[in-house]
Image (cartoon, rainbow, N blue to C red):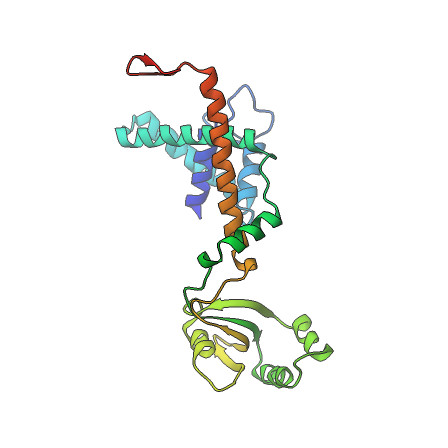
Length: 264
């Protein structure tokens, strides 16, 4: 966890967010005239809200002390590390520039996602056996057994709906090999029309699973399961087009020379 905080401070440093002595109105902490501002603290807290504010401050102080000691000693940076820092700073600058020019102009509609899915269905299929389940977790075995009876008797209706309101339950699709080994075996072991399994005792919790549907390897993935992936594909495509558009404009305004020959 500390390493995550350190990385955030490094990113802030690369982006030029460290406050110097002439701008200390909102200073939270300082180490030898290098200042940690309220704005910087707000950023790291937003990125890691589960960490106490004092831990963020102490992490910054520790990081700054080590950095100042390293620079005072003249710790050498090999050419590879210097090159990495330079590339990181350069990439961040370019990305920020692209984000500023693209902000608000790139949008993906539900219709675009639907059309892409319909044209590329062969790309979206299951690589492993899966199941659509309702997974209940109880602290008491008797309660779990009671709920099992209710599920078996009531396939629809108010009595069944109340179970999902009043109890801890996960409803969704799970893939073979993606769960605890015992749960995995419980769900995917062959059985004769047995769609409610358990309760299974795991670490003093009782797991009851209703198997609604088994989804075979090679079966089609629904659009809801691949929505985010399709969105990312389409946005990447539009970003690439936007980048070419920007580059065309920049080339028109620039003098470009290759091997001592002007190419524009």
